[in-house]
Image: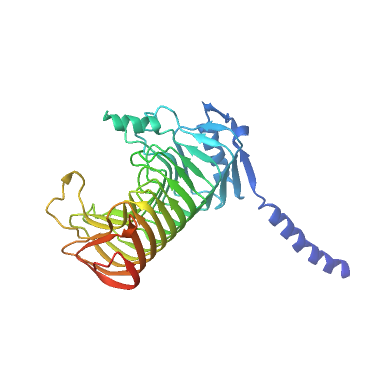
Length: 392
């Protein structure tokens, strides 16, 4: 009887032991799958093979790229995978082809689509975009360029400690995703590099961007239509075009942007600081529930901007007004210096004026004097010290 009872106790323990053992993560080293860390040999197939194996594993899986430089062509990673815990651990550098025509019209260099539970830890992504930038600057007929890293229709994504260098176009794009965390990101590109947004978010919810440094030729962070519950904190921007909501309202039917918090950010020598930008034409879009807080401006050309008359090239929008409704935007604890006399410019829609703008503790100077403010069709309130004097 005693032996029978002891066996009953042992079997569950053995089951738990083997059950836990079956969940031990597996690692796929790209070198073992044929990758060459010489920066010259095409290693795309090795990375795709590692993904196929990891995606097919029922256990959590790690794809490991040791130190070295790995040449990658267009890399496409998709799933429904058999596990929701795949980690790319990159100790090396992934390098795009030096000939920009190879990727110039493919849209994305590294694309994750329809995946869940993917993490990227460490690594450098070198887009080698300088040749394409030079082509565009010369006015020649050039391809548009590829986004370096894109996540589309994916959930529960974490990217940490990653560096994106010299992207052809956008560095990182989050499109149609839910629950994405980007932390410790470094973006490095020339201040004159065209269309090289650092991080672009659209049609996504629950995205967090933390503890990152972005230096590029376009927006450090651009926030597109359909973005909700976005949190940005402790980000340094410059050079670049600032943190921008928009441009919005390009399409007549467009989802809105709501619940965006931007906190503890610093702008140094940027074209803009915090900006909301909409096309000057009809649209169903809107912006609601935005907080800009604890912001430092250092020699920023346009520190605080709402521009609802965006009409590049005066094509398809002259003599029209923006249909995008902007409401409930708070600017709190915004300090620093403007590189131009007008530090606060709110140019809102005539037919859909901005409402619920709140200014709290704002102090912006130009050449050691209070900066100026300019408002059109903007309404709201002020509290505490506000410099320049509010024009709301």
